[in-house]
Length: 452
Ligand code: PMP
Image (cartoon, helix red, strand yellow):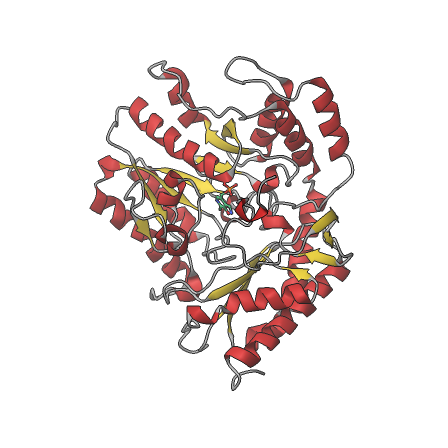
């Protein structure tokens, strides 16, 4: 028998050595071995957008397992990935009509980066290789995706990166120091991309990748729509592809089906994961605009030499196709309403001495903790404010998204809430009560003179 100590089970530097053992899960609830019922206010990892164990998925999965679960899509075709591709093309904004299937958000981004290179080769720009990312972003754990990632905590252990790609400042209005109106600030921030493209040399830049609304690194931070309008202009001017990483924001998380719809801007590629299958199977996708995809089809005729063994397998594709159908207007509307309810129940935190910012987009809520509200000075990272809040909320029966700690004094500690879109109003109340209690409790320890 293997020694459990040596199973790489508690990966990711887990936050608590005694993780609760979960026996089963349903709707927004996780039931522990000892019978406690936790509210899953993180939806797994912003994955289980429809809730746990929803009826219908098991029938689809069982039926597909009986019929055919695996085929190599390099040599066969099948209805399930085709139907999924079609429904994604219908749901996605603009002409994002070509779909490539892989297995994780990281792989979807890797794929987008390689597709960007292929596109530029095919259009006679073989030196356009560089991907520009943003600081305090997350695009995945694999070394290419990590090179585009700007979260320094995630990167630091693995330096040097595979690619020394540049980064521009994040879309983080709370900490911007640009002058002018919100719109002018947004345009100034977007122009950092133009400066970086010029510095790198436009003939070397393949793509810009960004989370439309930021995820775990600076939860729910998002700019005035003028930011993405300006990003679109810059990308068009310098022939740089714009990749929207919608791995976390896709499928209703921020209100509309996809977060880019909030800004009314169509990216050249969109990467999807998490909510695509709602956690019922591992699958992710890279969507590509028709005119970009046409360059692969009409170009040199060389195939795009990229594939993963399990990419688009019928089992995952059938499950995802079923799940995507469940994101009806009514479900998206419920998600928006529950997001509104949660931020309004958390309103008292806006004035709390250790809270610098409470922001949200749909059912994605970010709370930023600061040692000083006037100067926005983050807490000392060694105080582990985010972990303390997380631990206390868990004690109160609410699982929050394990947040990110204070990063290099640039950003404060954060707590993120991403409940299932279908969570009940009563559970939202439980979440709000537990989070307020946790913030009060932690404030007494880390800022005893400031506690309200
Ligand atoms: N992009 C974003 C925006 C993400 O939030 C994540 C996962 N948290 C990823 C990419 C990576 O996805 P995966 O963990 O499925 O590889």
